[in-house]
Image (cartoon, rainbow, N blue to C red; front, side, top):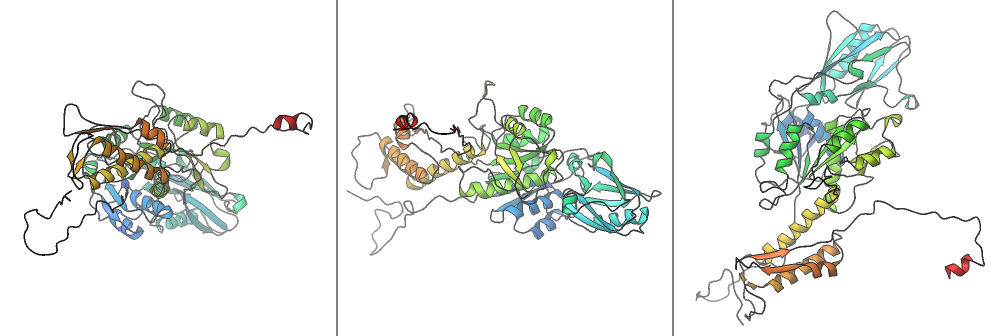
Length: 512
């Protein structure tokens, strides 16, 4: 029985010892699963727009995208939770004709006692010391100086000419996203020692939100520049319909989408959406995207949406890279400031949000928000009927791992094989496969995946697996692959059927 070589020619006559190296039985599937963080850059950033760039440190992000830029701040938040994932930034320019969001801080009355203003802008703490003798003008000037002394803030401050008590804040970039910048004081409250000095009064325009920002970047060139490079976890904080459609098409299930049969690149998009309970319910019901997961955020949270997006993506990437099937519940969104306790969603509201395509979070015991349920936007099938096939992020992440494992096994072990019917008699070493050989390979791979905790019920899988030669193309093998994905412990329900005392004559007999 001949051994068939792939490289050493059968007519090679020179002596003596020649070795052909074959790795097909040795390698294990590897996947970098890089993260792609999408956001606007400032003109001070050195990186060109619409081209992904590898980022390894926060200093590199600041240099590439500009200090205080949306994208630099997203990298800062991402790196607080995840330092090991390969990271790329995709900078986009301000929208053409866009307008920067702005707002004001008004010092209405001066302090009568010394103290500290615990100012928060976009969830970032800026302490400002105040003396009892400070005038309105001095307090206003000191606030402005403190704001401008923090280069990582997303705003700049100027004192309005002719009115010594009003400080003007302007977002560093143009676009509607700037309207999500929150401005407030004393976020932690009196129990943590945060309160305005006696006599001092501050008021914030727009109820504490910047306003007037307009415009959204165009992602056509940015998405095109991704080509066929793999990006597994996408942090995409833009929630307008045009942006969502563009990214959904890139990561969709169509022929040209990353989840489509031709590209097989996969990937998951993470984002966040701020709104009231009613607004989030409406938002969730108007979207139906299996590859995109929006984290629902309360109106009162001071952290901006792009930082929620970065933190959610970072924790998901770190956990799913280790185990794509393990639930994300209880993972902390490090660096994020949640809404005050009395302004957070109730458990009943969270439950309804999770049923309408919104991922949920709750405040942990240490005051840091935690992922509650990593829901995707998918809710309806092609006929508009309710469907939970892609309800959870873990479903798609597990499928991606399984398909890549299977593809690695087939392409590594059978890269240049011949195809024959079952029952064909061929010699040992012949590079020939039959449906039975492929079926055995797929079952073996499934057992390996079962051992890794990705699937279950191997006997049912084997019974339902179909491998056959295509009746119209003798060079094609067709496979019906029916994996039973592993599930997650998400609900632990207990019926506490208590007694005041067991009836020894009845209950003991029933138990026996």
